[in-house]
Length: 189
Image (cartoon, rainbow, N blue to C red):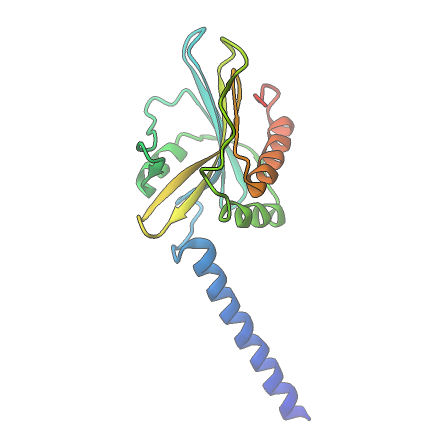
């Protein structure tokens, strides 16, 4: 009986280890993840109506929310929405103030959902204002086939409205909007 218990324990440990290996390969695209290597989510605000405004925040893989404002150099994704790891690192380095944290359970839940989001399931584009600026909510999906990150639009608000209609994107957007209202009195959604 004691031998059966030892074998059962070893088997469970082996299954757990295999499950972790498979989960990391699926979730991370086989890419090692470090706090400095990528953002999961981003809020960005831009306005040129009353002078140059550009600010926002990233949520990184550790759940740290870092704020940036008026970065001197900013790298936009290419025409297909892709950034290299180096480009994303350079943008994230502009977040020089920690303004909050996200708990690990929520971060894991929403990062799993992000991997399932269809980036092309977008609502029609609506103009609803002027001079208020543009607010964007993004998620970053690692694409092993290109070795780059794909910036996925989850929602656009303020002067222009557009939403990702994918059910997972809707859920993530609601979560990010809640975070935005808690950490930023001028949050644009």
